[in-house]
Length: 367
Image (tube, rainbow, N blue to C red):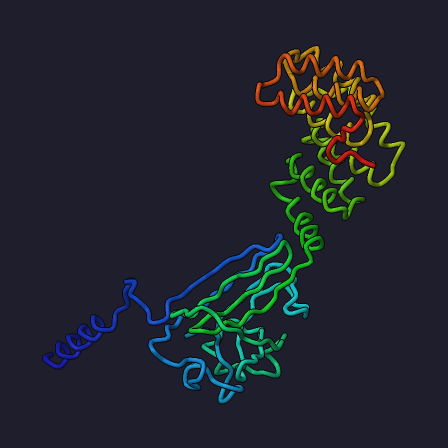
């Protein structure tokens, strides 16, 4: 019996000593995550950040192995650094599929071979197989950098479709370029996101079409998208014809030179209910597309409902000017001057003088 009690007591003590806990304690190499959006692509970097601690890290092979001897460098500490992309990208001009990758480096003086590998959960680089695991490798050179005690990754030199991801540590930086196909990735993501909760949101279909229009790409599909915004989905569910999406449709039809459908769309405008702000939106589109007569017809009706809307009077004056009716134009501008804010009157007078001199140009009006 004494032996049983002794064994139980011993096991009990061992259990207490070995039990796990959920305390968060400081780490020598803290975990860091950064996320950067380029276009519609999200780039995520997960790494551990060691400190210099007075060491000459770039010339110490026990800290950063050189020439892959005995192994590549994990480009951080603890587990391998992980870089993930939710769309296809290019790394230094080389194509890489969307996915999550282990990131390793083979330093050679000031030249570095960057390795992206299929396994993204290795402990360091000890078990990286350079033949079967690596899916992309490129060579880049490092540069001098401001001193950084902690290893860190930063996004620099960002444009709408490119950036550089830079590893910085001590007084060196290893930057490399990431590039996305902005149009293709955006279109593919729009196609995906127009499913689900966006399916019955007319604004989503319109905004997707509008993005294609503004970027002069994928216009045929954009036309189907804006028609979906107008006409709704199965059985016409969530149909929402408005001056907003009809304006988008007119611009796309103009870009596609679909004259008959364009004219038919103009004809249905008087059947659509609209707010004052929507009338402004459509009139601007009509003047941009040189549909000045249609703009006047719309404004004549809209002004009856919004007599104190000075913006409509302004557009009325501009549309009359483009129709060659200067007298009607200046008359509308005088009416505008009576009700517009004081702060706009200098700009209004400038427009009036430009119209008198035949020098006025409406912003973004087609040539």
